[in-house]
Length: 227
Ligand code: HEC
Image 1 (spheres, rainbow, N blue to C red):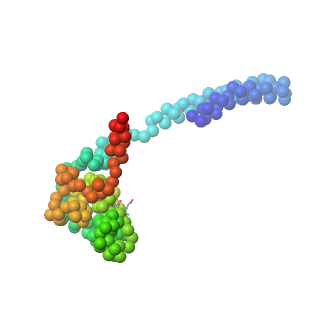
Image 2: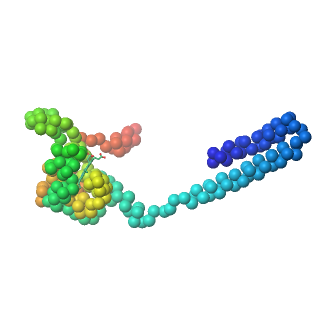
Image 3: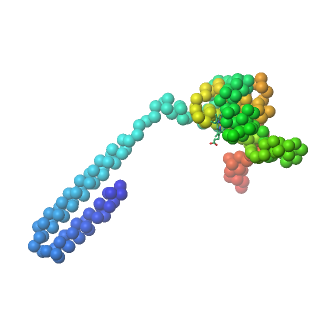
């Protein structure tokens, strides 16, 4: 496209300019000057043609994704449960998976790290909690964890299934992702260790982070509805 603009703007004027220049330098070489002009014109049409051909070729770049490939990426789960897959997993199974595949980075109980904190709040939120100071003494870096901050349990499932374990994302089956979500909820006192999670029961969880967060969607809806 850039080439075409450059050529089009250059073409008519530059050809006449070449003709004029050549004329003033040597009037006898008019024939050669015209030949040069003709040559430039020819070049321009050839290049324009090549440009057009390139554009035509460009539109043919890329290829449609197969259904299987789209399914691999189309995995976003929404807070209302849209896209949650079938399957189920128990917190007890999640415990075994967690110890084998997650604890080395997130710590034995989800708070020791070194990777992101999954459980507890370290007193970050509970300013009035008398034990806060003791917890801070034990874990001096104040961090907000998944269990205390994330407003929806469905996001835990979504995140684990698409991104964890860090070295092998998307390697977990749906049942395993449900089991690990259940175990993280258990570590955050949101489920019993004997509980099982599936696409219905996960929607019954009300995360503590829900009350601590503000919904942009609700804010906008309220604004629009106001007279
Ligand atoms: C090799 C280290 C490693 C392993 C193993 C690992 N994680 Fe993670 N995890 C991370 C890192 C690093 C992050 C932060 C990633 C980021 O913010 O981009 C993270 C983030 C997370 C988060 C989101 C935390 C937040 O606050 O954003 C969750 C939930 C999680 N991991 C769960 C798991 C589960 C469940 C497993 C086991 C199946 C697991 N992780 C295994 C390194 C790991």
